Image 1: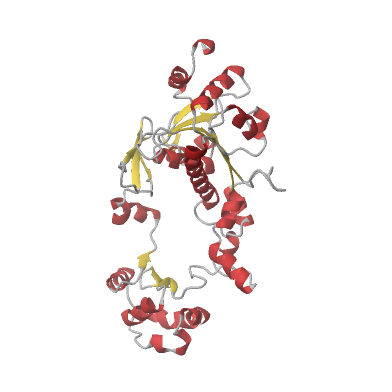
Image 2: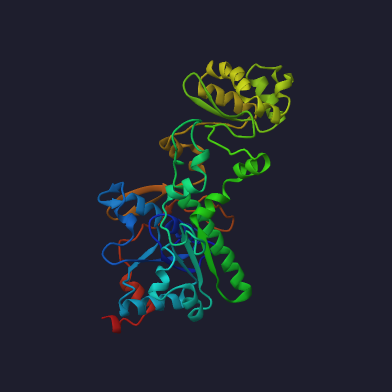
Length: 387
């Protein structure tokens, strides 16, 4: 088990697919023990989502490493007894059912808080537990669209474009992690748990940052602008002789350095480009001047030139290049698990590095469905009634 600041914390994980499992995976990476409660026979839906390695879902394995699994039918009395035995000793319950499901099972917040006062109850759902959309189902792409993210993603006049990663689910998972940690801290002082209600749609609104600021300041509705930053210039992708390079000249000093590095030494004296606001206003004209310079050299040549000048820059890596990047590897952002069926499986590591805890390059494998039932019964419950 990974050691971390949450070592000693037990999480009952009633989540499936992505938002909830991502949250509980992060809690595991921070040291918590995560007991995954799954439906009998089928288990987490993501067990059946590809790609597969020797018949096992790489998708599921990458989100459920290090967890334990027990399959429980919460409509069956014996399984309910075992579930309640888990809750008796758990610190956190995380679920991502549609609102109302837990109440129908008899395990809604009010019922649980009355019986297990110290239990922290975290719910991640599409639209939250309040509001007119509360009972609607949602997936990542639905909230990317409804939350405005798709309206500012892609090329101008292009087709609607989903962000390439499932950011609707992942941000909900991350905000739920933040809520759980805050609730654990609060419980130290109050002695009681609380309910955490995280909506995927809310999380998409929360990360709109610049888009909301621009609309509220100007009244103009933002739209997609490709790889360019809407209010910092030059801050975009430039075509090179053999590809592209990302340049982020985020202030006037960096712009002057960029002008010198590209051989446009007097460009910063042009009245159209003296300030960032002006450069953004005349971004088309500025790009037209810079484009020929970048097109004259290869991406690697520009990376060497710009990096030596102290200008933030980078290549546009594909996924294989990301996993082989020396900085990514140096930061232990590619870890592996040894699975009995799938073999050695690589996956993303934990980006939170802490001075008091090691960050091992290996993790425990994701569990098979119901793999830990016997051990959990022996630890949490008298097995005699269940024999």
